[in-house]
Image 1 (cartoon, rainbow, N blue to C red):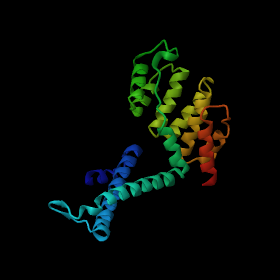
Image 2: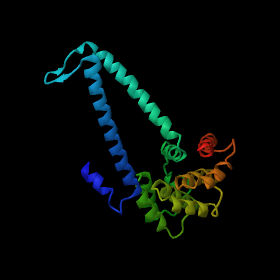
Image 3: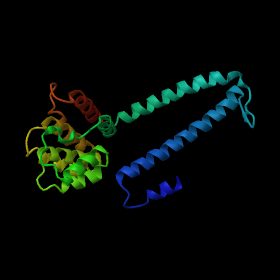
Image 4: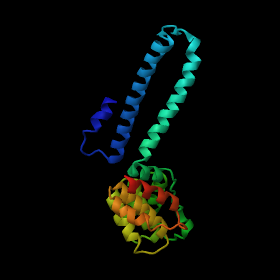
Length: 224
């Protein structure tokens, strides 16, 4: 853990790695505090104390386990509700909950060169940074290439570049118009530009893709 904490001082650390380390540290701290709290509760309220032979006074152990499970569930729900009240966190949750897979050649790609094959492979392997590199090396990107290039940028936390790529996507055709509106709105929000995200989310009508999720985000943005 010390080695991971030292990584936070590295100026070249990626946002993704930084978030992962912080999440692990917070979880470890939370688990430690919860363990200490319940150890004290066992001793003070139930007379249960750990010894070399295990727990003494097992009379209340089953009661304690049931109570601890209930409280742990309550804490988890409280943490989730608190976290999801933040529009930026909710945007990330909505992005993460959807599995995004490149269909490969199923949408009519007929000129798959090596860069395109590698770009698709890396995208579906969730190595989005490498995917963006191969997409960027395409000499004649299709509308589909540009769309998934933008998604790879978004999923690798390159929000400003993703926004620019999505804007470029809009000039190449309307095949992915609904998807572009949704993902660009997410990119704006994760890039801390709620006003621009708000504008795009309002363009999603009740007959279009992700309308209900758009309404969720709009509610969070406008009550924050």
